[in-house]
Length: 200
Image 1: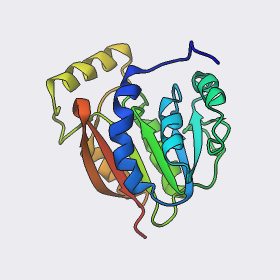
Image 2: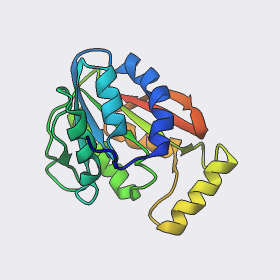
Image 3: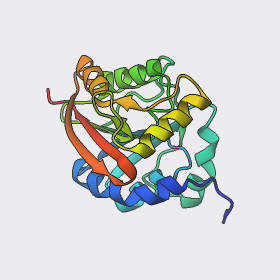
């Protein structure tokens, strides 16, 4: 059994609070597209506790190997083989899914990639489906905490294309692809879980 696996303390801290919300949203058999699987900790935890789901892990080609060892070790029957997904590259390698989930990606992606992520999900999400996006977000251009302000400065120092996204910008982006911001759940560590739904 591999023990030296890629590990995220943030994933370990937030997986239980996120699961409490996802249980109520991903509440019927279906396929979940995860964008940005990272270390695979979320995929394993959620697929273990929601066996009615098929979990489709994906990540950018440059990062996709980070989750492989953990997913292979878990060997869960409802986790599909991880696939490479660059949200800006067409066509996407996955065409159908019931729901989508992504954690801590919008502030790492360039804004054009955030647009492409929403567009790709909007083109494929069925009526009644939901896209759950977790992370820190600003509200009307304002930071929701001092720690988020410091985190945003850290991101922009790493690369100018990074940064905490504004809730209103994401709402408008979602609406442009036929999705509605239906729920906004406050989460630990000044994060939020945004639930975008296709209502028609």
